[in-house]
Image 1: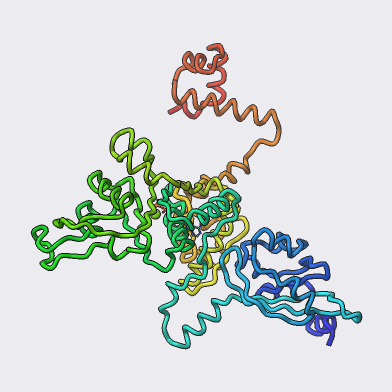
Image 2: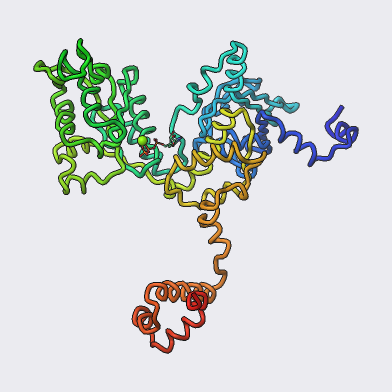
Length: 456
Ligand SMILES: Nc1ncnc2c1ncn2[C@@H]1O[C@H](COP(=O)(O)OP(=O)(O)OP(=O)(O)O)[C@@H](O)[C@H]1O
Ligand SMILES: [Mg+2]
C-alpha cells in the first residue's frame, strides 16, 4: 500500500499524519541527498532544546558544528550506504541511540536518510525496573557536563579545562546560583586527579571550630569531648584529590592562615599535635563575595587571596547568557519529568517569557521554578502558570507595550522622567530644577502625568 493510499483509506490528511508523528517519543529525522534536514518531529525539542522550525531546512552539519549533537552520522552513511546505528550525545547532554537508514535511488545513490533516535536513558530505566531497584535514578544523571550555548561561557569552560590539567589553585567567582559548584566538579573531573577524591566543605554552613577539627583532625585528648583515640582529618582522606572550599569568603581568619599553609607548604599539624603531616591536595575555592573589598577591610587575608587568585574564573549571571535559558529549561524539564515520572511540556510563549526575565537567583532559581512547574502545571506549562514575580518582571511584557514610533518613545521617556522626579521631589519647583525646565512647564507636566500621585 502506498502512503497516499494509506492516507485515503484511513481518511487521514497530511496534517493528521504529522500530528501522529509528533506523538512519537522517538525522534524522527529525515535528510535529503544534500544532508539538508527536510523533516523532524517534535521530539527534537527534548533532545536539543530546539523547535522543529529551527531545525528544518538547516544542513545537518551546520547543527553538528554548533554542537547540538555529536558525532555526526556522516560521512559514514554516505560511504557505506547501509543502515548504521551509533550513540550520540546532544547539547542537553542526552545520550541517544540513533539508527539511520539510507534510501537509495535506481542509480544506488543516497536519496534520503531516515533517522530515528531514542534516549539511551529509557533503555537504562527499563533495565532498572527489571532489577526492581531504582537506586540509579538519582545518581545516574545523563548530563555529565555543563550545559551552555553561550560563546563566553564556552570559553570559560575551555579555559577551565585547560587549567584543570595543571595543578594550580583556582578561585571561582560569580553570583549565587551561577554554577560555581558545578564548575569546581568539572575542573576536578577534567584534571589528572579525577580518580582521586573530591570533597566539598561549605565554609558558610559549618561552624568554624568544626571545620577546623574536621579538616585537620586531632590527636588523642586534644580537647575535652574529643574522641579518645583522636580523629583523622578530612585533609588526609582527600590526599591525591581535590578539596573544594565553597563560600571561602565566610572562612574565619584563624582558619585562613592554616589553609594557606596547606596550599603553600602542602603540610598541616592536627589539632593538639606537634608532628607535621604532608598532603598532596588541589584546592579550588569559590565565593560570591568581593574578596578584594574584604582584603581592604582586613576580613580576608591578603596573602591567601593572592595565593588563591593565581587563576580565577568568573561564572556569568544567567541574564547575560540568554541563549542558555532555553537549553537549561529543557534540561530541568527532562530532569524533573523523570524524577516525578511525568511528561510535561512547555509552551513556546512561556519559554520566551522566561528568556526575557532577569533571573536574580540565576540557574538555581530557574531550576527551582521548573521543578515547581512540573509538579503544579497541567500537561503544557504556559505563561499562566508563571508566578507573578516572574510574569510581571519579564522584559517581554514590557516589550509588548514598547513604543512603535519615535514620538511615542519620546512621550514615554518624558512621562517616566517627570513621574520619577515628582515621586522624589513632590514639588513643581524642585521638579523644574531637577529636569532643568521652567516651573510653569513643570507644573503643567505634573498635572498631565502625575494625577494619580497628586490625589493620594
Ligand atoms: N550550566 C549548568 N548546567 C546544568 N545545571 C547547572 C548549570 N549551572 C548551574 N546548574 C545547577 O544550578 C544549581 C546551582 O548551581 P551551583 O550550586 O553550582 O551554583 P553556585 O554558583 O555554586 O551557587 P552558590 O553561590 O549559591 O553556592 C545547581 O543545582 C546546579 O546543578
Ligand atoms: Mg555553590
